Image 1 (spheres, rainbow, N blue to C red):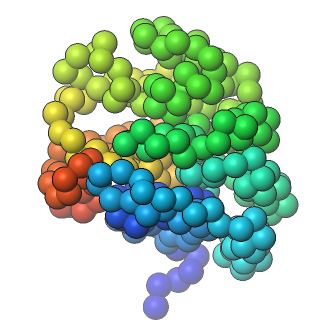
Image 2 (cartoon, helix red, strand yellow):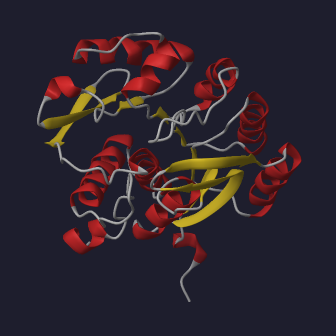
Length: 273
């Protein structure tokens, strides 16, 4: 029997992806691959595949609260990741439970737009996200379009990213990971950046020309959450997460007629750790 002392637990609060490439499914796969026991609170059920999101069915607020209470009363997580929260009420419920149970190591993936262009975060929820949840974040992990919406900064240069990160700090975030996949200015290299209050770190990797990138944001932030759950520093967690997502994109599964999922098996098979 494995001692429960050595089992690190992480909680994902997000939507379900019926296609398995993003959301709750991607998070739990990532947790498992990185040696963390995964738990979930489902905020919405989506009907989707590689071609896009066909339908979204929000979970009732009391059902979301009940899931979080069940976790909080018996299975305290070492780290928490949020994904699709959909509306202001859900964001408030998450923030209230974060405070109620004293949860730490919150990773906010501000899911707003699906790969196919479908909006996944109601516009009126943005103010609540900024006011209630971002101040509780250990790290916020927006891509370029999400960072622009959150901060109002038009991001063209790496210096623009810094300005956006400073605005997220002003909102209360402890750190920011700005994902660079949407930035064409860096050419054949993707540049992700970690902004801590006193340091800036860059992570570069070759840009891979592929349409099989569904779930990259979910997977990357879940990998960061896994690192925090086992007690790693934020820098170490982001470093390993970057290696995880790079492997997942490079060693693509290659199925689906649209934006296919990344390969959650790849990291362990490549690194054998």
